[in-house]
Amino acid sequence: MGVSTKKQGSRKPRWKRRPDARPVEIAEAALDVFADEGFEAARLEDIAKLAGVSKGTIYLYYPSKEDLLVASVEHRIITNQSKVLPLFLAATSDADKELTRDHFRETFSSIFKVLREVLGSDQMSQAIKVVMAERRRSKRLRRLQAERLALAFHIIVNFLKKAHKAGAIDCPYPEAIARVMAGTVLSFALIDELLGTEPGSYIKKGPVEARQAVLDFLLRGFGLADGGK
Image (tube, rainbow, N blue to C red):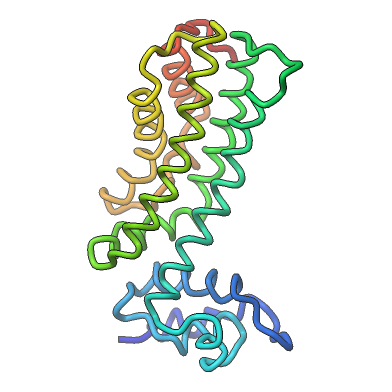
């Protein structure tokens, strides 16, 4: 099964043809097609057309269709993590800046804002669709997901440990709380997908007051009842 006639007619190459195709451009085009068509139905011809390269060029970078699947998801995960994880690291790496309650609240609010933007993006929506549809079939995809999540949890848990030790928050069980944090935020996109709506649509289109309520809820959990805006 190929791309539908409607999609095929409206889908145009995302990039102009270049002397050398970039792997990231092919990976991003692949994520588009995998999200629309599913892994089995996705055709390399359609991915190549969207990336503005030949089908043969794809094989120069990705020997198999599964290589391309894993690379497309990995690129999206790494891109998203690069927007969020440095904020956790920065909050505890500056030895000259005391990790106070106000500093924690400010940092956490900034992180939550970035997470809303990430989860509300079309690219994240595509990644969630692909991972949920294909992770059971692909052992490599499951391994990639586990590795990237483990890295994220390590950084977040370390952030919570240091904040607790400094007296900025009340968090005696950081490993458990890190999972609650992740589950709370990711639930917006995951539940949307399970309900058959666009993943992340609520966090992107829902009332600002509702998003603020979620942030305040999480901050209260850390003993910061006066969450702030």
